[in-house]
Image: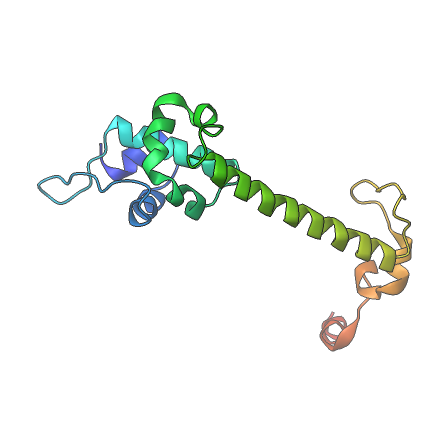
Length: 159
């Protein structure tokens, strides 16, 4: 099948297939006599595994580090091999989990700082979407919908 058909079958775009090929995740497919890429069902299955791994939070670089193991994942499914022997995908998954944990900690700290600056207690309940946060509005008028700064004043003068 041609690149557009293969991409549609895998739930992605032709551009993504070319990217995966350029990054070494997908072996270069054979070409037709007119030079078009010709993909088989194995390549489509491999792209589906790549997409699953990306959706689980791995990066293209994470997957590239273990591209030689993608065929195992195609045969057994992503969850079957991620907990395999050290040096398979388990180290890549452990590294990605550490990065995600660090990012969660950073964002949690950032939220606490913003909440403190807005006058909220850390144990204050989080209001639902669209509800007002009066404490933050008193500190930052722009968040309350009031103009602030030269650009906002210029826009207000035009209006």
